[in-house]
Amino acid sequence: MDTQLLISGVIFGLSIGSIFFLMAIGLSLCFGLMRIISLDQMLYYSIGGYITYSLSLATGSVWLGALGGLVVAGIAAFTVERLVFRRIYERELTFSMITSFGILIGGIGIIKFFWGVVPRPVPVPIETQIGILGTDVPAYRLVVVGVAALVYIGIWLFLNRTITGKAIRAGIEDVEHVEGLGINVSRLFTITFIIAGSLSGLAGGLHAPLIMVDPTMGLEVLAFVFMVVIIGGLGSIKGTLVSAFIVGQVVSIGSLIYAPLAQMAPFTIMLLILLIKPTGLYGSALLKR
Amino acid sequence: MKAFQWWWGILLAFSLLAASRVFLPLPFVNEVVIFSIYTMGCSFLLGRVGFISFGQPAYLAVGAYATAFYLFYFGTNPYIGILLGLLAGVVVSFIVGPLFVRLRSDYFALVNLALAVIVFYLMQKVLADITHGDNGLWFLTNIASTPLLDLSRPNHFFVFAFLVALALWAFYKYLDDSIYGACCLATKINEDKLRFLGYSNYSVRLLAFVIANTTTALAGAMYAVYLGFVSPEMSSPSRAADPVIVTILGGVGTLYGPIVGAFAYTGMKDVISKYIGNWELFIGFLLVFIMLAGEKGIWGTLQPRLEKLFFRKRATTVDGSADSGEARR
Image (cartoon, rainbow over the protein chains, first blue to last red):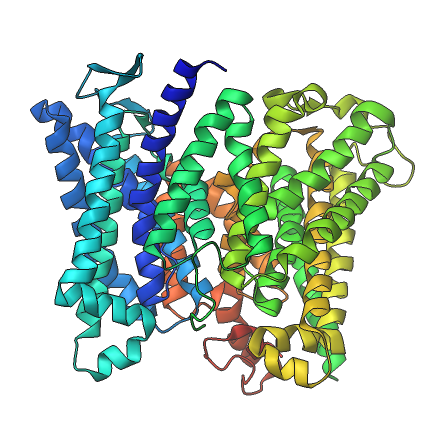
């Protein structure tokens, strides 16, 4: 394999990993704090993608579209949280999994209703190529990686430097104690869910120019995002970052070596990691339930 | 007396199913019967053992492809094909089972999904030389006609599928009433207590896993013989939730649930996609509604009313608690 192919492969893997990271971080936070598995994050991802498509068609700017996707996905997440998740936080994990899957399927139906079933292309906002070590790499992919890095820093600052963030971190350790300190846990849950939904929407908006948006785009990434969350360990932000990086690289480098490997290799790695460490790389066994 | 009521129930349910054969088109009833076999395994895992599996298509495909390979390359007897599909299900569950059942229920769901994806790409790309990739294997003409029940004819196939479903139903009923069934429920509700009683959670779960997934593989084998063709589409991850949806729709952990659910699901799919065309919308929100309304499903809601109606006794079996698996006992 020559260097040029390898470099573009690594960049491709980084950008894919960044998208996975943006989505997995929401899932991970939701699991850590609320103990729910929120499959409907894939719906906010699709919504983000479609809003980006519509807004970029209307205004001509994909960036504005991605921003709109972020906002609309956040609003959708807020609505769903208020209508559905509010009632099921106390239930067991499988319950939230099935319910959120229902929301995902229903949401796909709504998307089909508004935009139809035909895949739609979204223009790439930056066409320029940047040379890295003598290889031309699409600049847009680097921007995606940059945005993911910014989000990671932002989330880190939010969780470590603000009171709300600190409360969320404390809630991941023990929700009842946080409640005992007089913090409004219910509002904390809503905030976390909106953050998770918005980040998924952003991921959809950023991913849209790289693929075509179609109603089932959420189902296509579902398996990969879950893999990222599982390899990293449910509830751990750092683990999510590491495993998103691993999965992205395995998908991209794997496809360079042998095409069918791209889809299968990550799953094999996931099985291996789970067998060695059933809680994932950074997941703690102390998590209750 | 109690036993009489069960058998009465069985007879009623299955005679309704048999009667529906007269009024409804044959492909539809066949689909319902196979789908209910497909769902029985998932319902058992979810309702009895507390494991939700988003990877049932993997085992479906294992059974289907084992049957398809036999019928495409080696032989012509559909019964041997189905038997091989069943065996393949047992073998695969015994290979992956020991690894999977040690995991927590949420991880379990997702590694199963991962397995479905692996099987999908295995059949679509990696083994494309023998599975013919996306084109699938077509072997309808290879299926020899057999005496007594000729599986190559849809109306005979219905009788066969019907008998298999009945046998499976009786088998699961038997499991439910045995000590093993109680162990399964115990491992769902409180695994520590089961350990104190001297049972091994691991072996109870492993056996449940093998039983459930063999049932699913059997359904796959029957799909293969019925349709006369298999394709990787069978284990496509986007269909991973079908059995889970049907299980919830029918009522988790109830014995009639799979049949009622399969009937309702296939029916709605046909009717809604014909008249409205956007059936995900409907099924998704129905799922959410059922979950929020107490996750009892169609059968779980109907059951106490029917009992009231027919047996003129106070319905005490379903107590409206979250745990309908417990309720059915």
